[in-house]
Length: 147
Image 1 (tube, one colour):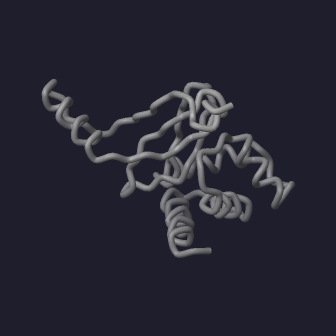
Image 2 (cartoon, helix red, strand yellow; image 1 turned 180 degrees about the vertical axis):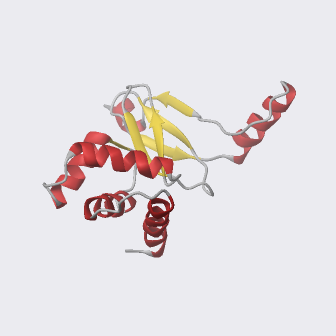
Image 3 (cartoon, one colour; image 1 turned 45 degrees about the vertical axis):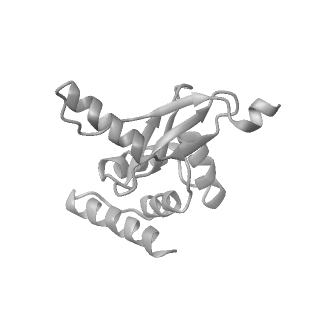
């Protein structure tokens, strides 16, 4: 396990301890697997990933642990146009937006400082103090456009 994944798991275990919650073997396994499974995954996709390692872990336990990871600030929920909630590792120091393919569902992370600057300027012009934002761009990826 690389250092970042180890730090995230340790952060999760510290959160669980602070909150007085049980750190079960299953919760630990789910958290470790989450940090090792990059991307934007639905509950079902992540559950299938977990089940390939340990079929005894139930979907409800996976869901509750994902919610705990979100509460700890270590996972982020994303909602795209298909109505499916997806989860990804939260990296506060690495903000990004998304390009989402409406045909195949591919999700690409993007970042451009010009967009960030423009958003801040627009908020200022309208008297808003930003605390965050979600920016998803929808269309067709190059593979789907070629097909």
